[in-house]
Length: 363
Image (tube, rainbow, N blue to C red; front, side):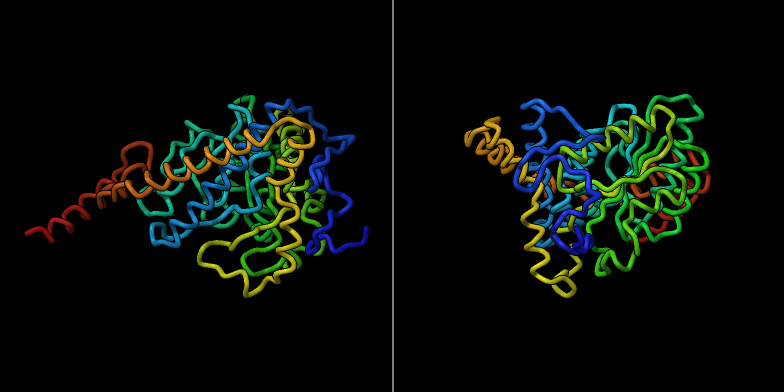
């Protein structure tokens, strides 16, 4: 196949794929998976509900209720597939777009919205969910993940770390430094790169002259490219990579080849740099529609099932919206809470100074 893999809608030959865009199941010699009908229906439910949360958040931002939002539209399969591969002992390190992984780690969607509404500093306990706080600084979470993985290694733990980043972040020094450390120390970490083709307005051609997954070989560990719109394949490859990490085989780089259907964030206008035909080509590879087609063809679900999921999604969307609007504004001094785990003299001093400053406004 001679298509331009970075721009066209055709799958490049090195792509790991288990479910075609038409909903046909295909086999792979190295990455196969045996899913029950209930498991497939559950994955479909995840995809639909997460997309509904995302669309609701975009609407909230457009109505002035969120300061900004980073949509995952089109990347649901990469996040749900990899998220459902995690065990209770694994730790995930997200960027600011991993709403699907957060869903898989039982993080309340409203807590995600609180960050973008400006009423919390993250809103969830990373230890409780084994899901780190969102990282806004591009690529720095890869170093956090490798450090955490090395800690697991030294503590004799059974888990692994997985870290999410985009194709644009692959050019960051932090990411490449994390590759070095992970390789040299054989750290139990999976690097999960969602290549959605665009780093804001810069195409993937500006990030690399070779497929991103091939960079791993230069650092001394394996890499692979998976169809990021195929939830089955993303689940299978991530499950194996995590198992390899836990068993002492070191890091793996997974490049999930997908597409950002919406804007980079709600401050972005993708029509200024993307052509409509590219978007239309990728719509044919929608991650939800292919699972729906598979369920129909295999007679694993009927129209009543799909109607019930749609109704649940609408109910979830309404509930998330209501609870988002009900979130109270924080008190000014709350900003000093949870900066350090233990009491800290400098923070105490700064809190007292700010409290005194605020008292100067009282009548």
